[in-house]
Amino acid sequence: MAGCPVYTRVLLKISGESLMGDEPYGLSADAVSRIAHDVKAAHDLGVQVCLVVGGGNIFRGMAAAAGGMERATADYMGMLATVMNALAMQNALEDLGVATRVQSAIPMDTVSEPYIRRRALRHMEKNRVVIFAAGTGNPFFTTDSAAALRASEMGCQALFKGTKVDGVYSADPAREAHAVRYRRLTFMDVLTQDLGVMDHSAISLARENHIPIIVFSIARAGGFPDILQGDGYYTIVD
Ligand code: UDP
Image 1 (tube, rainbow, N blue to C red):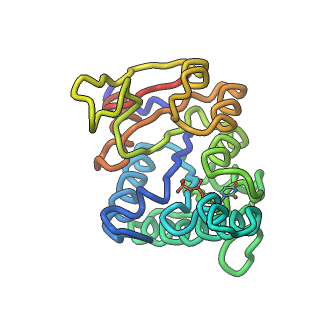
Image 2: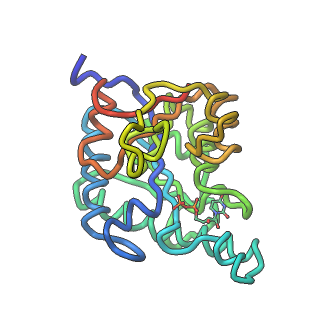
Image 3: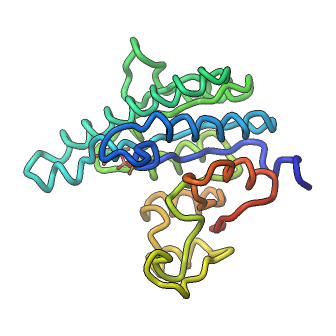
């Protein structure tokens, strides 16, 4: 039924790229604000929302490692980039009157709370949007894995993965006119066909913990709250 949320607690994974909008690097104020409006709309439906933010718009460990930097150091830098994005999301949400807390997996007491699971749960129960920064806190992981991990820890009913397209397609829809969007896929489909929804460790963790992954377009304003109301375009992996 429209207006009645399908889930009551969800995690939204926001990639660094989606915060970049049309900019070549870093943050687009417009993109950050548009995503914040969608998070607020979901929050206004009474859904408890937490966020995991990526950092690829600023720094990617793998790319820096390919250029010769030690991988672990590069990954720590990537995690620091996600903290900047988390603060930008916090700022945009608080501008809209949404209460938030940033929790960082790398303790950074002067800018955020440290990640404490039970405290994060309490914030969510109080309807604060919790923004998880610094990924898992460990190098050699990604923020997709952090999203599956935090969704599991927070007891989320679904993990929303915002991408540039509105789901998983049989081929690249930008190149193949006949590409079709899958409505539903199993975790095994995604793993065995290597469909690139999220990295394998993230998919495995979501699968083990029975958390469906909903792939949708974060570039389309209103997409996130629409799906929460039983509408919209997406592929569900479960
Ligand atoms: N990262 C990491 N451990 C984590 C999460 C992230 O080392 O648990 C680093 C990694 O270098 C990664 C960067 O942070 O390239 C930014 O995260 P990610 O690439 O997942 O961001 P997104 O692609 O979602 O923007």
